[in-house]
Image (cartoon, rainbow, N blue to C red):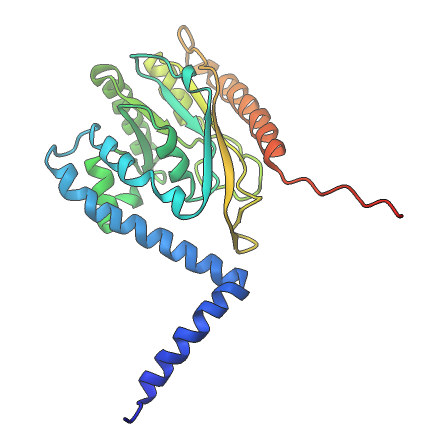
Length: 275
């Protein structure tokens, strides 16, 4: 039986790829991230017909959350939630969270309260099945390049929060931060909370660095902690109070981030004493 060049190449690839996966951390990183993105796309395709039965509705976030919660197990990521009792019961609020990578989606789905939707960049809306699933889930989209558009969306969000009992999730850093700390916060989320006179609920996700690093092309099993901090009241505050409110919340979150990250950071074994 004659073996074609294509068949020989396929056989060689089937032998070499597992070896490369085991021997190269960078190759393993790209494989895991490729599968992660592809799996999210597949889950979005599954979610669309289920969510379409309600149309665009915040209750569809329960479907999206339930479809997403198994993903952490595929990667051996153990998640612990602390302080969930700090969520204010039966009222709107604005959640602010640090933003490290696309893995934040797993942390969000782990702790996402009922009737809570993220605010996301408008570009996400045009990402095929993922964008459609997000739209059906009631996610609020803003054009970060147009200040007037962002302000009007925030004003509409404030009205929606109060009239429909909605919670809103915002990443105030505005972009993913791989530095191991926190970028300065943009003030939109805090203007939204002050305008609606609702509490700000800070959520801190511990550093992924001991198991994930985009810069080092490293992705292994690991653990992270998601901590819900006590809500910060905004009743009686005005627009002029937003800068101080922003810095106060960021300071509390940065302290919690550093404490959690230090707690989870692997410690080197003590040096062996000479015999």
